[in-house]
Image 1 (cartoon, rainbow, N blue to C red):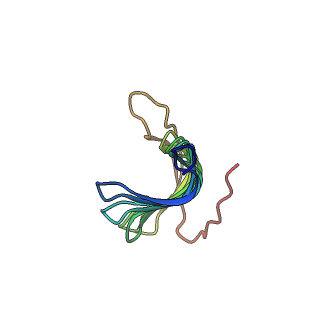
Image 2 (cartoon, helix red, strand yellow):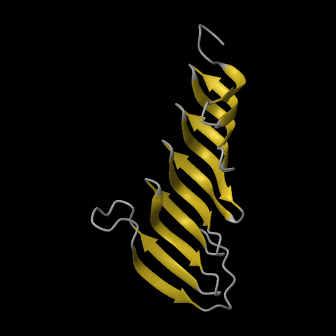
Image 3 (spheres, rainbow, N blue to C red):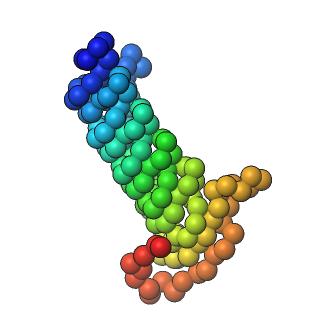
Length: 144
């Protein structure tokens, strides 16, 4: 504590069962830390002004996670999203949703190159361009 506010490194537990271990500044999560929820979900990464910001990974359950960039508490930049059914998306994110180019790998082995726009107002995060790639292609993905 510094001036009555959390500062430096420390641990805090909320009455709802949430728990945080990491850096504090001005009574807010700031810097690297680990936030866990009673559900078992866990975020490991950077915080700014009490929000996920920078690089980090959140895991909601077995084979269900997002790892990549965050901005003001939302997925942003380049990241990888895994679903429990084995689906995987590697690509751009903005305002929490898929945005820009990416590759969607389906559990059935199909690979799709997709482009989405998180800022669409009527149907946000809808794929508006999609190309099916041969299953034989092993895709290392570079996004610019």
